Length: 530
Image (cartoon, rainbow, N blue to C red):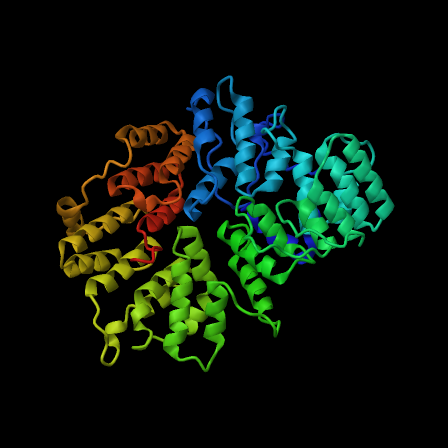
């Protein structure tokens, strides 16, 4: 995936990551058609080149404009990335140019800034408010590639507010105070009036007694904030630009606490791996004056305190996981970054009260052995009271993650279902097995027939039928746009039957891996109240 470029940037190769003039090599489908531009890494699953074949631009345009790009689950992000990054033959219709602009916008909002900029550079009509050279230059500034960014502003004078202020910032970055002042005067004469940036430029020269607070909402703001050593604001970072958050992780000269905050945002968006986030967190603890503030920092500090009783360490970890249980993406990221602490925690009577939560966190972190460990509560001496159904449900969730004997676990879950609510919960998870491509055993299918939840009518039947029809027609792009428009950051809100049909459509277009991930998210395993 394109987010894998970020580790190279972090290692010092950022200069090769975001050149404003760089182009992504065309896929070979249509060398003169931007639809044929592909941005996937070798070996990364792609959608078929015919994904738009059975679609019309007239119907696709409102779907692209409606699909969410923020607060996505990992499965939704996988699907949208695959759709936007895959090369394809152009769809038929008069709105092709508008669709290409929407494709570039979706890439940009997903944090895939380099592909977005490369695609925009090939468009006659880029997305409103977005410019490919500005995006690439601004991200180079965010990453600390100041020489490359400022080189883009030499030669022919570019028009526009961004380039006018860039001239001032680049002069300040070179300690050219006179040049910075002249550039600000020229910008003002052109009607460009950015008071914060003007103040920050003067602060960088040391000529401002009361400098403003730092800003991190653009690369140009990041660069001048770092140069002027501006104090960070108390307000949290915005999650709207995960690409900037990922760049902040690599950016030298930023406060460690802000880098850690940015790393959490970027990891949740899948733009850096959890190991990179963990490195940033570990670096915080190298400072003897560091005081943990976030739930995750407190959990790590508490787990490292060997004088803390075991139940206290478990409570701190549980608190951090519960704080992250607001979305599948945040829970998965938090579970993964806390995996070392969870792995070192023993199952005892003191920690057994959090066994279910820790087991689900282990599944999120893809630690299936750890998940199994937390189901062994009954094996303790004088174990606390547990319900067999709850423990078997952990095994059933592991099946969704690709681990375990579905036949044995399914039969056991049916046997352990002691109440009507148990049977409905079991029927739902068996339906989700089918979404993931795992057939339930006969006893499970019988329970599905008698105890499945009643439809909540959250989705109009026609919407689901249209997704199925699109899959039958080979319109893979439509399937993804329609599915993500319905799941909208929380597939657990959908009826099991609707999810089963969405899963069938995703399997049919070759996105079975995303269907399985979506099924696990739809179980609601990430919620604190489960």
